[in-house]
Image 1 (cartoon, helix red, strand yellow):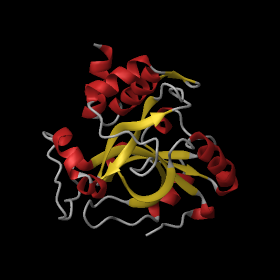
Image 2: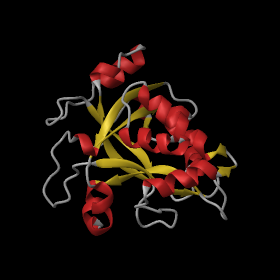
Image 3: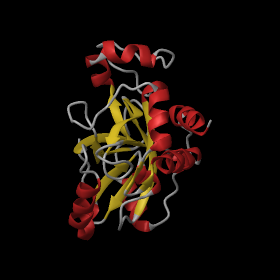
Image 4: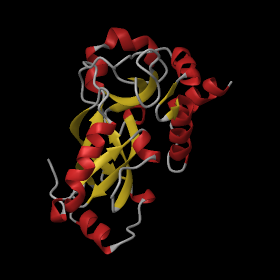
Length: 231
């Protein structure tokens, strides 16, 4: 269910570079999580963090539905993560299928401009989708009357007991040519260690994302990948 916010502003989620390099013109951001996804460096970057000849790696989210669909490809890689690869409903929240991220609120007068900016920024393999974002009460304190008004009208999710909203998100899905997963973490680390694109070194992307995640909820996959890259 899409939530209508005052003045018809726009929510957009950041789970990768948008966490540490946010979109312009946002008035506030909320910290929280998605359920039913894992975050992985499974997207080739042929512009920002690599080149067409030597693509780097950037993150996308893989849904539980897609994990089930490609279970034979993913099962070895996901052993130890306790991710249920069955058709049964995923318990919410499920720690192995919970991605911590941020939601940015864009005021109505800036929606068109920001959407155009993001469409260009995310053009290499990403498409827009709608997802439910659960707000973490322990990580958020309203800093303005506008923020308080927006959050106050949001419903409470019956399974998480947290307020939630429906937001736009850019995802690199399995059916686009830039999608590279599943990839062995050692192979991913080697690519990140050596790749450079128009936006800089690939390792910078990983470092900045991992560092920002540590501020409110460390990601074990990011931490392990960074450890390997820096070793």
